[in-house]
Length: 115
Image (cartoon, rainbow, N blue to C red; front, top):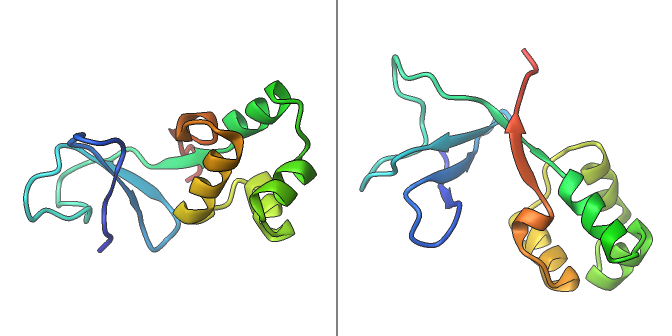
């Protein structure tokens, strides 16, 4: 079971990071419901893409090293994003604050086509 992270304020959809590393969007999120898949219910597996971040860095004329130093990130954070792996919400928030941008300028949800 996971704790849902709402996609935006006053939104009924929740973004759920599951133990196997996959992401699920649950809609609508009713009171007392969890992100656990329900029998017979088909959900689209999603993954995080950092392509918006790389575009934002280009638009702001910044390198990955500049971001790492200004946001106080580790080289592992940068490497994990480069490999499309998960980073924590606090790290995403640091990136958004450093770049003075919205989360959609850093990550995007894309269908996970892996089997």
